[in-house]
Image: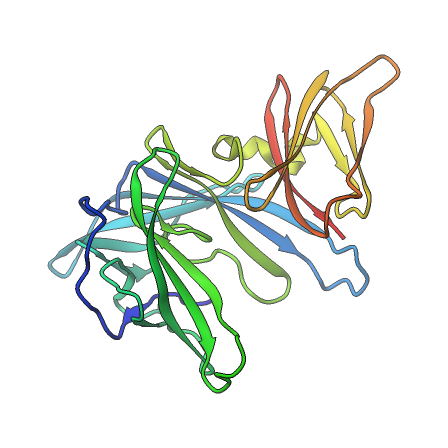
Length: 311
């Protein structure tokens, strides 16, 4: 797992966006990350895929030295395995968020976020990227679901030895009061090797208030959205697919179908009813480009969100 705990090499004065700094470390907050695993060990596609969901939250205090940290926990929605796992300790002091991960392989304390950065500041990460450097390319503000203006810091990487080639890539987006836009509060839950895996923050809540939702009803996903349980109501196959996706109503009598891309754009909205002679509905998705999509199935019994892949 990559160790993504940045420290700042240069810090300039900060000009806030006309408001007090919104804290990240709050016991009322919940981060929900979608973890998509694609098993590429099979040499012939289509590759098997699996989707799970990881919740992260803050609960309780722990005294480390003379400082009082908050405890960070997570749990993954898997059948029979959703026990909380202690991830580490977190401390917020103004714009600086410090972090002590659980485990012997990490440094004692590090800086997880620094919202006192300015454009052009260099950021170093404890990972093996000797041919790249990371820097703050832009700082602006963004309004999320609760309509509060939040500071957004975009961190890019670029090649050191090939300045004539544009290799600039945005790698991290920090949002004040939320964390990192891709993996949430702390660090990716996916390993970057085989089988390949990717993280996607789909929901951030502060108490009962939804602050960020990457697609409609993302914050409603619970353990019942797991494919092993959802198949008792509806079935989707094949997945991955090339042109057509079949929807089979097993117990549900009607379903509302929503398909979004990973940016949250609605691509399809369709309602189907189960008839006496009809319980299978083919979805012609030939016009979709190859990639990953989110399908949401809303029935009277449950709301199910799954990842589908067009090859």
